[in-house]
Image 1 (tube, rainbow, N blue to C red):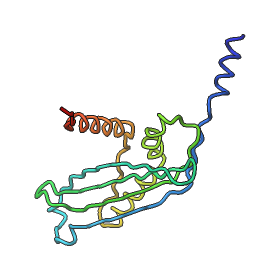
Image 2 (image 1 turned 90 degrees about the vertical axis):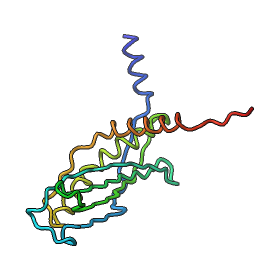
Image 3 (image 1 turned 180 degrees about the vertical axis):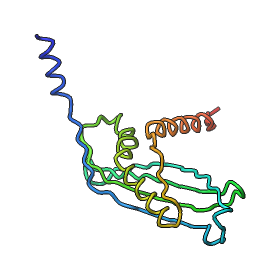
Image 4 (image 1 turned 90 degrees about the horizontal axis):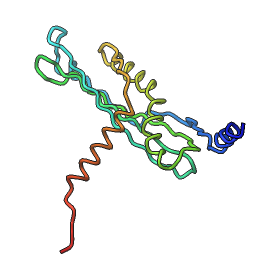
Length: 169
C-alpha cells in the first residue's frame, strides 16, 4: 500500500505538460507553374516529385511561448527531360504555449510534436495549391518528424566532428 501511495505522489509531483496552439499562419508561399510557361503538353509530362522538409523553432519574448516554422519545398521534375514542372515553397508556422516540459526535452518537443500538429494543415495547403495551379492535388505523405529530428542531430554531429579544432602549441 505504501508503494502505491508513493507512486501516486510521484505522479502528482511530476509537472503536467500543457501545450496550446495560439496561432497558425502561412509565413511564406510561392508556386511556380513552369509547364504553362514552357508550353508543355500532357503527353510530354511524366512528373517525378521530391519533397524536402526543414524545421525551425524560436522562443518568443513572452514566457512559455514559441514559434515553430515548418518549411516544405516540393519540386516536380519531368522524368523525360528532367525539366522542372512546378516548384512549391511553403513556410507554415504556429505559435505555441508550452509548459511542463523539461529543458532537456524542449528542443525535441518543439521540433517533433509541434510540427505533427501543424502537418495536416500543411498537407491541405499543398494539395489545394497544386490543384489550383493546374495539377492533380498533391497529398504529401506523412512526415516522420522524429526521424527528421534524428537525421538533423546526426548531421550536426558529423559537421562538428569534421570541423578542425584549434589547439594552442
